[in-house]
Length: 276
Image (cartoon, rainbow, N blue to C red; front, top):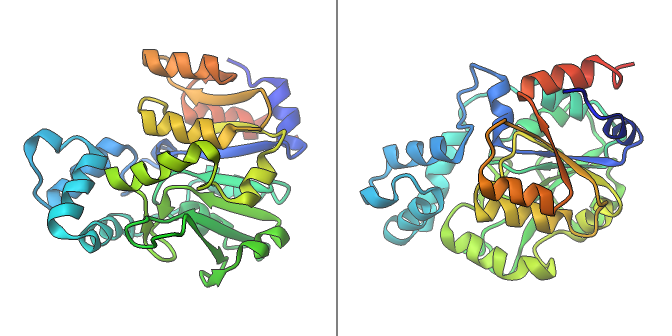
């Protein structure tokens, strides 16, 4: 399947927002970090015992740990899992090298996009935070050295890295338990948890989903609400076998599936017209 020329032209013009999911980690066969929610919950439940019936459910397992072991235990275990040394993939590095990308969305808990951007000094980040730990705040801003920033600082950054689920760096912020998502999803329809600068930058831009799936209600809701008031056309690299809910979602949201392996897409995308 060829890369659509419309996507290549829009990307080159800075009109495409990359939306990175956990599946990007499989581009490095030696990456020690969990690349799926199923892998992550297995690592959490290997460290903290939870009831058998929720051992395969990430948000429910995290909620059990929060309820019976304290929220700090959730943060500690998540930090232990994602602070394992790992190297950003070629995809992270290629995106970071493109200074005409005003917004990169990174929807997983690792810090590999941050790592890739550290060769630059013209970027900063904003990430979602848990109401359980930061009641009354939906997001925290950081300069590229990890120090706290203000929302107004984001107006001066060439690239804003948005991490809606939080990240292990710089402050171990994680949206992962049932209650975390209940709080956010209660407000997300009116856009309150989505940073104003992100809302501004997404206007009339396309989204390119990389390493993302839309199999759960949470995945679909975050994608839908972040796409709100953006362009009408988007793209997603997806496998041949989509679930019924995924197929319905991409059709409803104007997302064109690019049915191929992510490694194949990366080679074609950066090895062809875009590189030229």
